[in-house]
Length: 185
Image 1: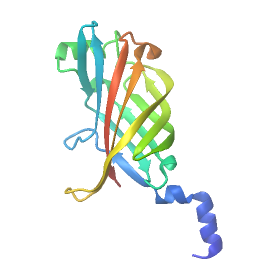
Image 2 (image 1 turned 90 degrees about the vertical axis):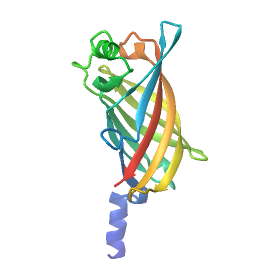
Image 3 (image 1 turned 90 degrees about the horizontal axis):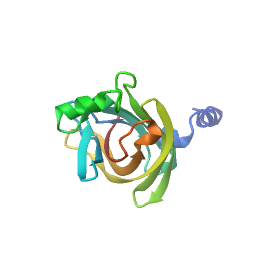
Image 4 (image 1 turned 120 degrees about the vertical axis):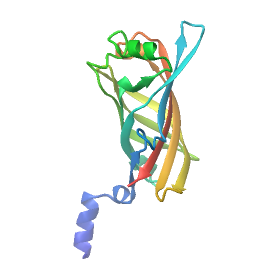
């Protein structure tokens, strides 16, 4: 490759995106190593814990250029699991998630900031119940490396609080607990 061809390639594919790796989120099925859990108030007396069992997505990550990172996550709201079948069926109705009208919730990053020492701030848009809002949350890299499965993975954890009324749902504030593990492609 001559210098002109290399220079043209670098203009089309900046170095950060060439060096960044693409990861698929290990989020559903038999190998599920990612989760999106939630915690909500139960009538002001205790906390109700649950999770979404089906999440998919991918992210681009380069430890040497955090700002080049991007993430896209899809959540199947019908996969809600609060450890009580009748309650889960009610949460799927138009009283709450209305999964027939809104079968997908999604997050797409607009920027990722390096906060140092494995900590990042993720900014982007979250779509739920037909409403899209800007959100930000902090996360931490929990580990990275070759695995006994013969692949390379990286993991992150974070938390954020959503005011469900911002999304047209009357469930009060809900804390989301994110644990994301990606498999390098």
